[in-house]
Image (cartoon, rainbow, N blue to C red):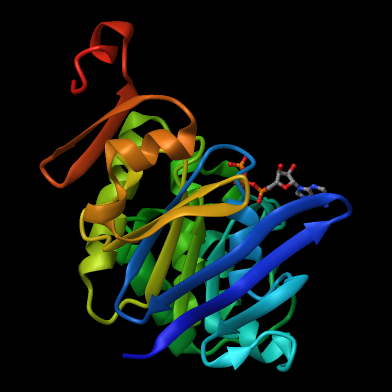
Length: 270
Ligand SMILES: Nc1ncnc2c1ncn2[C@@H]1O[C@H](COP(=O)(O)OP(=O)(O)OP(=O)(O)O)[C@@H](O)[C@H]1O
């Protein structure tokens, strides 16, 4: 098995603040990870390093067999599919959905006289079909709902056939139906043996798609736990991560969590 990410002692500091502290983490190519943690835990910073957008202050970040800092990031970045709120903001609102997706094969945002051949357009269309967004092909990005935009962004991230897919809070801003649709789309993707190694950032255990294999819990820039999700998504570890007593349920391959009430507090279990 080949490691897609291999972080050793990765630390990111900005002024007096330590955003990530001594992160040791390995992602293999057949794994699907979810990163959970409260606001400000360092999840986006971790994705910034994993996508070769940010260098660690200390430690070694191995990405797709290369070591960040010893390789041209412009060779590395096209091998990584990334979705994030920051990237979504850069997509021109007047751009057609088919162009938003197809332009990813050239690593650009905004179509400007690039030449794409028929195969690129076929692939873009196929990805939108797989993500249940084919009917959006000829709409402009600015007219889409938040949930539709997320699907288009994931299709765009997959367009260049990445070896690593990083999804930074794809469910943020979605309503219940939109979230459930996205979770099932990601679950289908997770079970596809040809899909790339995937890392999904989330605030909520409800958003962990069935088929995801591993979890990493982050709090104040440090790993609370990382490994196979059955060992990591536990009441004890999630309570420590979010800093409050939680009751965690696991049913039909989905998780849910809520605060343990005072009534439960003395009983030990919910
Ligand atoms: N340039 C900077 N200087 C100082 N602190 C920073 C800087 N950039 C980010 N931070 C802080 O680092 C911490 C981690 O930020 P990050 O965006 O990685 O967290 P996150 O887990 O993704 O949060 P959220 O869930 O709210 O999106 C936050 O407390 C943030 O305020």
